[in-house]
Length: 145
Image (cartoon, rainbow, N blue to C red; front, side, top):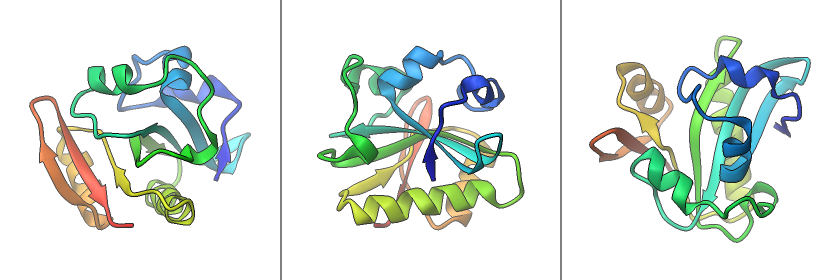
């Protein structure tokens, strides 16, 4: 998993296409698997100290544009808030790679901020996450670390 530097792929985000590049960089980091010229999957991750229950919470919890520590060091919660793939199985792979890195960095929790869709629910449940919270606008799924 590598840090994404070619931002033209962000237009393909099916979950939060309205977020600008500056908003995403303020929130956290953007990673990809595969080759940067031909990514397999992309995930946007926030590094937080608590769990957001809506997008506005996510935005307000972030650090106002100061550089984020690499891979969320010193943060208790890693929060993937959007993931998409270009190849079958790549979304699952990037979530599992993120989980493995979170474990290496002794992160306490890996909790998503997901849309309330059947597709997101099936994706996270089939990949071993547990539904943590069913909120008004979103759902939080937690992956065991």
